[in-house]
Amino acid sequence: LRRNPGEIEFHQAVREVLESIGPVLGKHPEYAEQKIIERIFEPERQIIFRVPWEDDRGEVHINRGFRVEFNSALGPYKGGLRFHPSVYLGIIKFLAVEQIFKNSLTGLPIGAGKGGADFDPKGRSDREIMRFCQSFMTELYRHLGEYTDVPAGDIGVGGREIGYLFGQYKRITNRYESGVITGKGLTYGGAQVRTEATGYGCAFFVEEMLKARGTSFDGKRVVVSGSGNVAVYAIEKVRELGGVVVACSDSSGYVVDEKGIDLDLLKQVKEVERRRLSDYAERRGAEATYVPGRSVWEVPCEVALPSATQNEITGKDAEALVRGGCIAVGEGANMPTMPEGIRVFQEAGVAFGPGKAANAGGVATSALEMQQNASRDSWTFEFSERRLQEIMSDIHARCLETADAYGMPGDYVAGANIDGFRRVADAMLALGLI
Ligand code: NDP
Image (cartoon, rainbow, N blue to C red):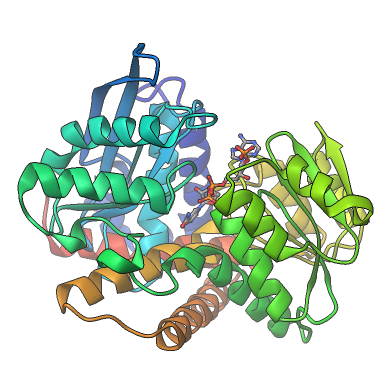
C-alpha cells in the first residue's frame, strides 16, 4: 500500500488474489523463499507518456498515456489498451494484474500488460480519433514488438482504433509486423472470431457453469450490462444458446426489452451509427423501456453477465440479484463485482465465474491471432469458434479441479487464482532471479 499510494483498484485486484493463494503458499515454501509474491506484484516496467493532439477546431489537447508491462515469464506482454477519462495508473495496474493470471489460465504462451490513456473518445470525430491514435502510437511504438509487447483493444478501443494504431506503427517502423497488435480487421491480418471472442467466451463459460449444476441457458432470463463489444457478443451467443436477454445498459442508463433485446437494431445503433442506448430504445418503440440514471442490476434475472466496467455490482446490487432469483454470474468485464458482492453471491450459492476465467476468451483468441500471423495463415470462423469453445471449457474444468484439489469445491475464484498463479510462479522460479 505504501509503495502504490492511492491506487485503489490495484490494491483491490492484488488483495483478491492474495486471499485465494494462502493454501498454495502453505504447500510450496519455495514461493516464499524466492519472494515470488513480492516479485509478481511489482511490474517489470511502467511507461507513462505525453500524448499531444489537435482537435478539428485546431485546439491542442494533452492526454496522458500508459503502458504497464507487468510480467513476461510466459510470453510477450499481452493485454489491451483502454481509452476512457477515468484512466490513471491504478486502473491500468489492476487490469494488468488481472491479465497476469488470466493469460496464465488460458494455457497459452502470453505474458501480461495493459495500457491506455485518459482520453475521452465520446463525441470525437473520426479524424480526431485517428489523430489521437497516431500521436499515442508515435510514443508507444518503441516499446512494442511481436516478441516484446502486443496490445489489443479494451474500453474505447475497438476495430477502428486498432486500425489507426497499427497503421501508425507500420508507418513509423516500415515493417508489416502483423503480430504486434491484435484485434485487427479481417482485411489486414485480423482473425475470425476475435471481435466476438470475449462475449462468446463468457457465454460458453457460463453455459459450462450451468451444465455443472444440471441446467443450461435454455429459456433463462438474462441481464447483460454494457452495450459495447463484450456485451453485444455475449447477448448474441446467449440467444443462440437459448437464453432471453431482457436488459442491457450504458453509462447513462438501461433498457428493458421483455421479449428480448433486438440484436440487429442494437448493432446498428452501437456499432454502425455509434449512438447511445437511448436511441435504441427510441427506435424500438413500445417494446422497450429506457430507464435513465439507474443501475441495470435492479432488473430481476436468473443469469447476470456484467460486461461494462469495474466495480459496477455493489453488495446491495448482489443482494437484489439474489432476491430476484439469480443463480449464475459470469463476469464479461474485468473486476465488475465489488468484494462485498462476491461474498453475497458465494454465500447464496450462486455460481460465480470471475472475469479472469469468464472473459479469458478475448485474450485467448488474440493469442490465436498471433499464431495465425506468425504462420501467415488464417483459419475459418467455424474452426476458430471451436477452438474458443474448447479453451473456455478447459478453463472451466481447470478452475473446478483446482478448487477441489485445494479443498474449496465450486469456488471458481479460488480455482482461477490458484491455477493462474501456479503456472506463472513456476515459470518465474525456473527463469531465476530476474
Ligand atoms: P466498450 O468500450 O466496447 O464498451 C464498454 C461498455 O461499458 C459501454 O456500453 C459503456 O457505456 C459501458 N461503460 C464503460 N465505462 C462505464 C462506466 N464507468 N460506467 C457505466 N458503464 C460504463 O468496451 P468493451 O466491451 O471492450 O469492455 C467492457 C469490459 O470488458 C471492460 O471491463 C473490459 O476491460 C472487459 N474486457 C474486454 C475485452 C475485449 O476483448 N474487448 C477482453 C476482456 C475483458 P458508455 O458507452 O456509456 O461509456
